Amino acid sequence: MRGFIVVFVLGLASAAMTSAPIPKSMKASSTVASSVLGQWKLKRGDQGKVSYEFTITYEAGGVLKFDRVYGGNRQITDTGSYTTAEPTKDDPLGSITWSIKQFNRERGEKSVIKKLTATELTFVDPDGLVEEFERVEK
Image 1 (tube, rainbow, N blue to C red):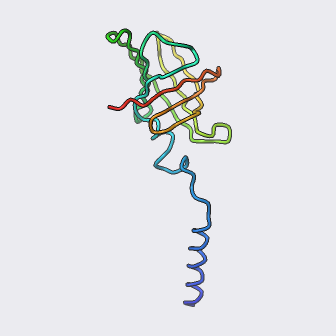
Image 2: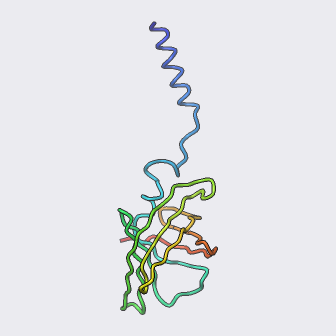
Image 3: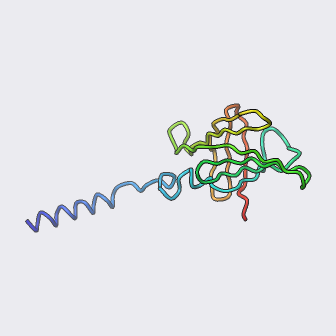
């Protein structure tokens, strides 16, 4: 009986050592939801240069804030909600679906993530426009 248990345990250990590692994007500590939390400043977008500073803040619980600062003194903040989706075959880095009331109008979309690191977030919207953000350190 002991021989069977030893062989069984060694077999399990061998299988564990030869199995493929878990991809980083699938580890619980690096989910899309936890990776996007925080404030992100627009670096570059396909719509050209904007006349204001634009940041997006993703808060825990699905709260989203768009902040626009004009000339360093006038700020407009709009609040909405967001959900994240983990990587799929169609969206290999995941996506963010958001909705916000802006200028008395509800708007939203699904943004497909093209790059997500500790300091950079790039996504493309349904119209194909690409926006690049950098994390704001506080």
